[in-house]
Length: 242
Image (cartoon, rainbow, N blue to C red; front, side, top):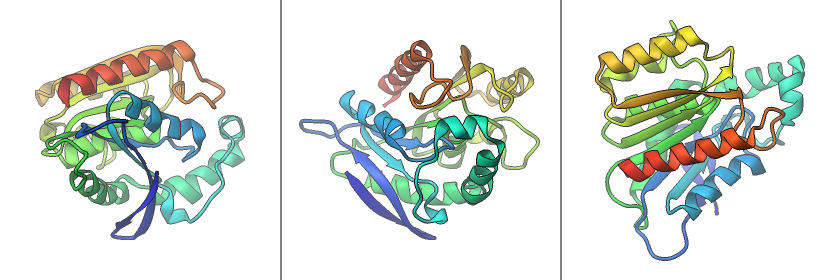
């Protein structure tokens, strides 16, 4: 079901996936990848719902206006396409703006009779992985479990780097990186690991034998085995905490 959520900056299109039967169910907020809303991204919400979760998947690019989904193969191979993505879309979906929106996303989930009371889960992909961890640190009393799959820039020198929020996190954290990912190299993994450990955050960081972007089936680096491992770990995380 497609809905619209009023944020502080306009109307954000979002997709709701509700399991069959009678609720309430645990709530999950999905942060999309950098390529944007398209069938492969929506399938994440659908599959989570079939596993018993009430899912909200917002379009984080709503500030850019209506758009046609970009071709993932061109985004991965064409520098000009990546430049458009960075400037027109990602540039307007900063962590600060998305976290401002996230309050409204969480309020929506909290206001649904079919959503189980208590903490919700978040998961994110690529850009969304950063947002998922940032949400855990920004709304620690509302996020009980947070996952990041092939997320980038998770522990940088930037003032809004997610690892800086580790002391505020109360959620269980799961991070899956790729063996080939310039946006999350080994030194960054170590930095994130140290920050979470020092803060006493319940967490696990793993490296998959895959390339950045492996979960979404329409990317040129899609890896079926690694994608299934993603599902196994994600459902285990949410099943244990929600």
